[in-house]
Each structure stands twice: as C-alpha cells, then as structure tokens.
Amino acid sequence: MLEASIFRAYDIRGIYEKDFDDNAAYQIASAYVALRRLDDDCPSEKPLKIAVGSDMRLSSPKLKAEILKALSANGIIVYDLGLVSTPAFYFAVSSQDLDGGIMISASHNPGNWNGFKLVRRQATPISENSGLLWMRDWILRGEKLDSQTKLGIEEIKDIPEKQWEHDQKYTNLKKIKPQKIVADTANGMGAEYLNILAKNLPGEFIKINFELNGNFPAHEADPIKPENLKQLQMSVLENKADLGIATDGDGDRIFFVDEKGNLVEPAIIRGLLARSFLKDRPGAKIGHDVRPGKITEDLILASNGKPVLTRVGHSLIKEQMLNEDIYFAGESSGHFFLNLPLGCFEMPNIMILRLLEEFSQAEKPLSEYLKPFRKYYSSGEINREVLNKKEIFNLLAEKYAPGELVFLDGITVTYPNYWFNVRASNTENKIRLNLEATTNELMIEKRDEILKLLK
Image 1 (cartoon, one colour):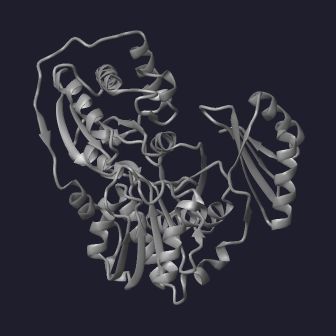
Image 2 (cartoon, rainbow, N blue to C red):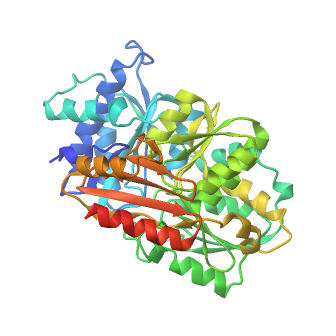
Image 3 (cartoon, helix red, strand yellow):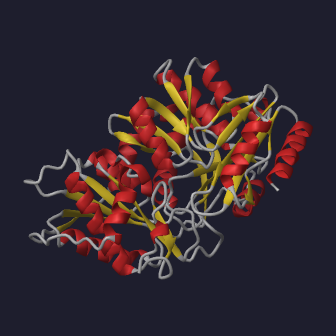
C-alpha cells in the first residue's frame, strides 16, 4: 500500500497503515538505491555506504526493518544509527563520509504518522525536484532492482557525543553565565542532544517530557502550536526560570520562551543568530523564508549582512543555501541551518549555545533584552480553503500591484508600513496568509481586508 500523495515537496510523510505500509518502506528504500546509482558521485564499481536512523514512533521499528532489508539485499553497506534525532542523523552521514542516508520520522506530526527524510553525501537533501518525484514515479511504474550480493549491517554509536564535540567548537562556553533553563522535548528526540547540553552548561537545567515515547502522552511534539507550549510556559513561571526551550518530534526545530513565559518570535531568534554568525563571516549571505519576519532583515542589514529570500521548506532552503553560498538561514517554523564544510543542515546545539552566549551578555531579564526587537505586529499563519488557487493569486497581484511583488513562493507583497505573503498548500485546497505591520491596528485592518478578498 502506497499513496502517491505521501511524496511531498520536502520529504515523504503520511499516516502509517492508511497512506503507506511496511512494504512501501521496502519500495522506498529500493527506489532510493536506484536514484543514488544514477548520480555521478556514486561509481558502480563501489558499494554504497548508507546510514539509517529512526525516531521513537511506535511504527519506526517495523519500517526500519524493511528499510534495512531492502538496502542490505541490494549491495549496500548499511550503517544502523539506532534512535537518533534528525540533526544527529545528518551529522552522522557527513562526519562518517557516507554516501547518503534514510531517516525514519514524521517530524512534528501526530503519533499515527511516519515518514522518511532522504539525503545524499554530506546530508545534501533530496526534495521534490532533486529526486523524490523520480522515486515516486519509479515505484508507481512497478520498477524493481536486480538483487546484488547481500552485505552486512554495521552499527555506529556515540553520534550525539561526537556531534557535541564538533558543535561546541563554534561557541565560547566560558562566556555562558549560569542560567536556570527549562526544556520540554514532548517525549521526542530533542532529549537526545539536550541531555548532553545540560551536562555541559552552568546553572540549573529542568527537564520536562524527556522520556522517549511515540504516543506523545503529554502533548503533540509541535511547538509551533500555542497549546503545545503551555506546559513549558507554566514551568518557566513556576520555577522562576530565565529561559524555556521546546523541540519538536525529531529534534530539528527549536523554540524559545522568555522568563515571563512568552514565546520569543522565531523571526527575532533568526535575526539574533544572523547577527552572531555575521561576526564569524562579515558580509555573508543570510537566508530567511518568504513569511513575514522583518526584524530578521533589519538585524541582517544592521550587521552588514546580505539578506536572501528563500522558499518555505527545509530541503528547499538547504538546496538554495548550497547553490548560493548562504552561510546561515532560518525558517519561521523553527528550523535554523548553518552551511559549514561538514555540511548544510540544522545544528540546534550550535544555535542554542550561540543564543545563550548572546543572552549572557545582557544585564537584564530576557524579556527586557528582547523589547527593542518586538516592534512589528503579526497576524500569525491563517489558513483558508479555496476552490481556485490561481484565481486568488491573480486577484492579489492585481489589487496590490502598487506594492513590491515577489513570486518566489506564492505571492509576497511589500508596502512601507505592512507586508504579507500568501502561498498555497502542497497537499490541500488551502492557502496560507502571513501578514505583518508597523501597528496592531493596521495589521488587523489589512488582515481582514485580505481575508475578505479570499472569500
């Protein structure tokens, strides 16, 4: 069983035993091998070395067994990473000089979902335009691989520890002052690296929902939803903590709350990180996605960086970073990427350490330190069902033609005192509106004006 719709723009994802089953995992691994054998960097005379990792979802062991079976049956040297976060998976592929890898995870989706993130060498992502759709069509045509000599499966251990040794070199731990931090990993894989981080930080580290559990008993592992931050926010207040950290199911997205329990907007986090990384590489290109978050651009320009607009989607952003030599990029959904000689992917250890170093220099509570950056008013993301996406985009382009229009991902419109992006869902008849303005009154006015048009 395999529904074609599970092949998405950035990865493969769906409801287990509804959209795909164990046999589909075998087919996906086979299609992945067929794809990699076509690539120029994979000479046919040498067996490929491929890593396989998985998260703690209840369906992951069965899916992993099929992935391992398919790879080993087709002449692949397989490296089993065990239970790992997605950033640790990327690190393993790059640091161990492997030919690619398959990570079994559905990221932040509910427990009945699962999926696959696929990479080439140096954890270079495979997206819809760089292989996912080719794999889909290969499977749907009923293609099969000719079985080759079955090779062994080896284990690679201590990847999180090796990752920490690498990541800590990109900050100065001596500059981080003792702080009281609360972290909520929602029973997901973020606990893997946060446990190591906690051992190496000064101060007090309070852990919430650190036990791996694919049922997600506390709440969904999706920090972008306000209801999933409530437990963290309450604990920050109860413990009089300086900072709260939340991670998603596979640990590749991170969110922060201040000492008052308020979310620190990802656009501010992205801007502060951009400013920090521009000290390493002055004048570098810094990426930010099309969804509004103007404070990021303000901070990039103030730090003499070069802001670059990107599409939405972790695979698409990483591909653009590699193609355009973008040093750092952040997505509004909590993904933060660094483009290093090792590879270009999410590196949450480095991001957290850089922020803690930044916050340590402030002689005031975090909320006071952030106050100058909280200068714009956002609508948040608003989804609406529509019958004709193309017609909607034409209407928006016509009505807002006096503004600056960009069509990189949907339509982005910029006026001096407000700006917005409307883009289409890849899988549903929905469009998503994100709007920002210089005053709350103007934000409400323009938000409602656009929503009326969408009807």
